[in-house]
Image 1 (spheres, one colour):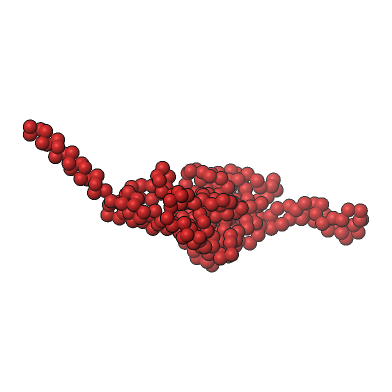
Image 2: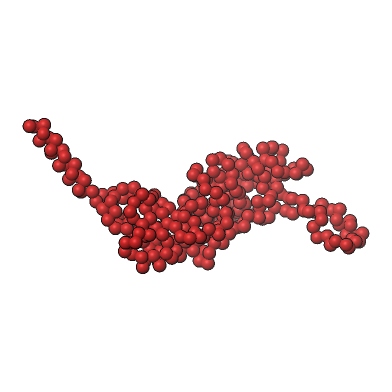
Length: 286
């Protein structure tokens, strides 16, 4: 009899605990990360649940014009919430609520699928503004040396010639002089960096952003860097003793925000995943 009473008491406690599970409201907005403007009429849903703006009974369809969404009576727990719109890249975020904090405000980001891979400025109201990588054609492939740039590159010997016209003697003499283009000057930056990086492909491993001091050095001391010409003696390399790791925050699929304090002077930004360099940029912080 006593055992039966104990079992009954345990069952009542379990039922009471289940009944006390709190529910809350998940609400938020979907924004374009480049402009900060709301994405009109996004589709927002929580994976493996009944909560989604596509539900015919969703009561706040009018607010979707301002990119806003709201899900009520959501049991506390962990969820994956997503946002999508035609011709936009998916935005998603893992969220969690508790009995102590059953309500949550969420900001999701999604951006045009026409945005090309590369580095972009933040806070641009008119749309994505790319930081052109004019140094990429001078870059070499390095292992232990991390990154290296050629200081000069030969130009096409036929560039600028007009077919069918004979060059005079002075012109011919000038043509014999070596034609090279110099490594473009570094991009002048402030003491801090805040940029977006659009990755070329979806990779689950973390993106790592590191800046290294840049200095000229002997190519012979960096034999692991492939891409220098046979007659090139010097190049621009990283100084691994002077570096800083920047913070990387996921914003949307293949989109990351990179922030942090730069080193003083000339430096090379390396973006990598799984120890492999994706891209490098040449900056100078004043």
